[in-house]
Image (cartoon, rainbow over all chains, first blue to last red; front, side, top):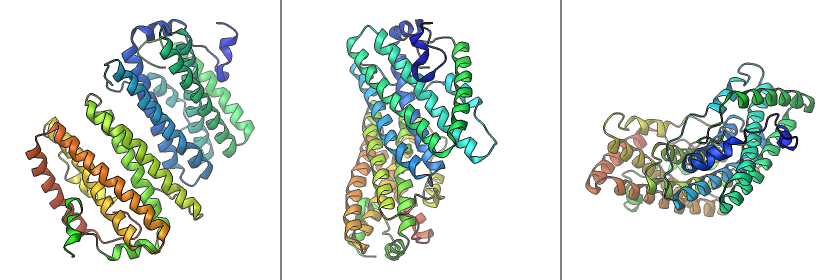
Length: 200
Length: 200
């Protein structure tokens, strides 16, 4: 584990370096999985808007993110089709399913909102880190710069989710819960074997 | 029932003329309901893409419609906020729920796909007709032209769904089932009392 690798958006554990090599040899799978990640990012924001229509900042910040994530889905689809590859079926997302197990189910409204925003922030942060790996480690120059742009965009979304959390919840509480999430996420990353057919 | 009213995109029954007057006096409700209609239009297309990722024409035709419908959601949101109105909670959609009761549940893959596409076509057609009513009957000139643009867009989407159906299913079968749907939809419209707080 290199020192500089440790700090991408606060993540505790860097991605196993073998992952990019695995992704390289299963490009169809990784592009399909990536397309569905963008789709899920869009529908998660739609669900948040549906759940909290009275929270104006949340609605106003997340509405343009839906447009952006869906635009990403279309870009990834284009890459698949340029290569005569098909958008396959959506696969089970073990990483996200494990994250959701840590989400507060009861609790008060504020705690539940906080967790929902932090899960989104965390997925954006890890996606950003994975895109960085792809932008550095793939063989194809075009795809390297393709993934560099995604990396920048996800970093922006990560920041938006954290800011929204701090807008609705006391900053100290956000920091404390964010650290718990980071620690939990590192455990998941350690448990999951790196798979070249999954973004996470 | 005026003769020219009967033929908007083949619908059998025009909207009760009192509906626009009711909508006029509950603008917050109608805008909120409209916003969620656009949102549901976007998520329905996402679901179709998820269900039929191997159908290239469907994926390619519906992907830009998601962008467009979500853009509509954002425009309606803007209208609410300009008027200091809130995006309220999503309401029960009796019209769509009744439509879904007519959808083939078993049957073969082709029949199910056909019904899914025709339901979308039908909702677009009825929305188009409602937007026409609003564009003609509201008091506010700005909103009249606002709804005129939506009307044109929904007419385009209606055509896309019918074309997709004809792309995957024998045209004669499409025509026959479409007529069954039109007859069923007219029954629903006759049953439902016009409500100024609902788009349908």
